[in-house]
Length: 385
Ligand code: ADP
Ligand code: MG
Image 1 (cartoon, rainbow, N blue to C red):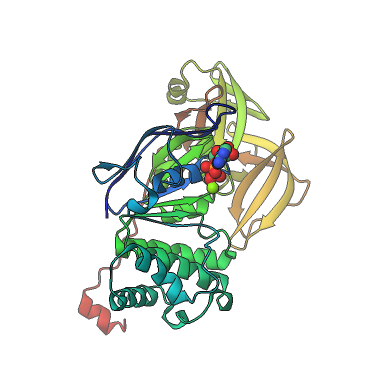
Image 2: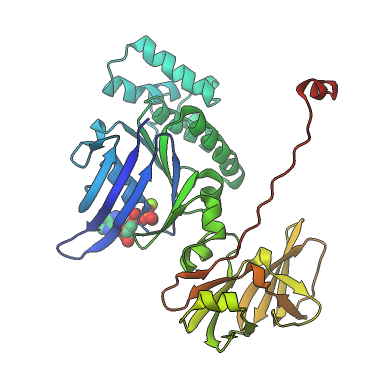
């Protein structure tokens, strides 16, 4: 276990001929045992960051610090790091046990019996103890990925790096492995950086998430901070599924006008808007609603299609030639082609600067905790638990 620090980490590829920004001026700090998810669209610099931490790329500038030591000049093998990739590349001619032992044999002076004990302990932790004699070709995709994770874990590294490790698995297994990796990380307490392009993985797994775009850090915070209080329009659109609806507008007196929108702003909101003239109003599908009557805080449109998901429906509404999504209860329907009013509640809107994308206003969030039942343990037993 160790702390991990990236200080102004910058990697420019082909710096002299045809420069491409991998990652720029990235500052991130992890305490011992932290789980950080690096998330962002393809090409935003996630792998570059991870490969730099591992020592597979050398930074153009900036520092990587593990514990108290700057490791920029250290060989990958000296960094006490384990990395797992999307294509987990198990050695095909070796059994699961050999795959998991190999690294320990090569890089440590542990005895054969110590290696065996470690491999078996990790295998049982990962539920693959019965597969140790199997070759990769005899294992399912999920089992292979478990062996690959196990192979990294047996090394008991200071820092654990995972680059889209679940991308090759089907949706159900992916959801299962998400929880499994998270639990494993908590049990082991290994400082971990996990890379994904999938915002659901980021939301569900990370203690904190770092959102990158075009090599630049957009926001670093807990998943809920990034969801409720996005720093800018990019984060607002990236976190949350389906994405936030955005209305481009301009300020006209105390109103926002544009894209089918004519929306009055309160004094408080006008204060948050300040001098900005171009404004983007954001509302999440789950915070909008379809109502019977138009009003000051509604926009009108035509239903394109209703997508039922059981507990909820997504209503796709065409507003001024742009598609908007509204979440309604699964028991509420609308017909295709029907004219409807979308309510955009003042308390739930986000406002962004139309020039810079910076957030000007995020709604206050009222959190609620569930009041647990107050059973004494003996009562619980009596209740049959
Ligand atoms: P991600 O993992 O987020 O998809 P990468 O870190 O792989 O993104 O890439 C970041 C940027 O750096 C992209 O524009 C990519 O094309 C570029 N890049 C990555 N590796 C190299 C390389 N070896 N040479 C040149 N450009 C690269
Ligand atoms: Mg990548």
